[in-house]
Length: 139
Image (cartoon, rainbow, N blue to C red; front, top):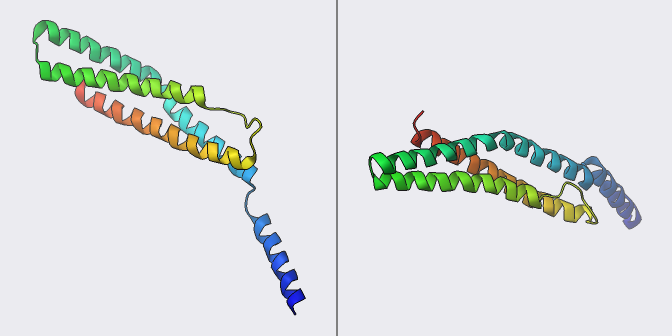
């Protein structure tokens, strides 16, 4: 009886582990998700720089015409935030590794989990600062 239970347990383990996607397949799907988020964010890069330039022009105009220091400070913070989002994307791209290298599939999974968090943070930062810029800058 114990022999049959052992065989049944072994068969059950084999069946259960063969049903789900392998770690390599999971890693491939994770890379696709990461690149999908990157591809959503990347087209916004030009808009960030454009809005940063617009904020700096508005700062210059206000400093000449009406030294409203509170508004100028708000715009300076906005310009810094726009630039930080832009730099954040480049920082992420420079440290992202598109190949697995010598890492085990488990190490790749840990790396990709971290990368998904990082690029998701970049995405959220972009959306937040663009919304803020739309509210603060004249059309």
